[in-house]
Length: 215
Image 1 (cartoon, rainbow, N blue to C red):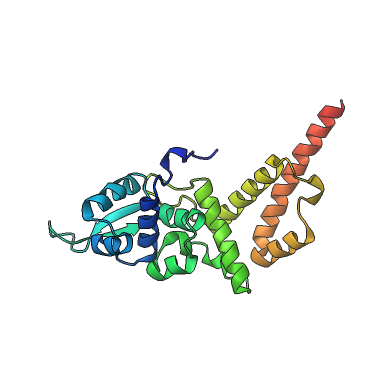
Image 2 (cartoon, rainbow, N blue to C red):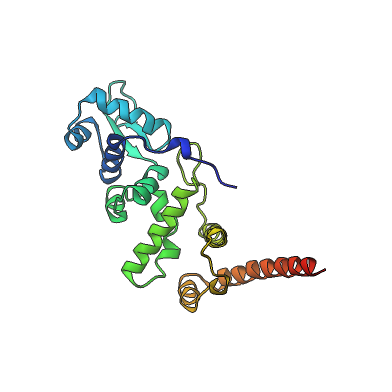
């Protein structure tokens, strides 16, 4: 169902440090990376190459028409998501450095419905974690789910899967009143309707399975 990314994780502390710097810096280059890490250009390049190969970052010329134009390094959606989910980078720091980042703006209509700033930030972080954990990116590191309704549906499916896979899961607490109220405060009427229809399909399938087991 999901792509495995076990062979494409960050493999060294230097790679992690470089990725974090690029995610928090608008126009990171060899000079800023060297200042941050204390490493020379060759050592930095050796760590940048796997980051680029694994679609966490990409290089860009400031002046594309010039052969010897200065290079800067930018994070992909995948790189930003990984840095937030696994390296402890603050979402606000990434947003300040990369205001047009798709992975941070695509779901704004959904997130802005949460009035409490802390809850909004926490929810956004959880959304980013889902993208990173299930590697929901294309071969260029761009997120493959850009529609908020599609993301919400995917998140619900993943959440249900994780709950039932947990050996400590209590089926009597599938959705607590607090969870339901939080969900109602986030999604719109049409999305709630779709969610109810999705749960009804699950219930129908479960009823059929129970009937078959009782036969």
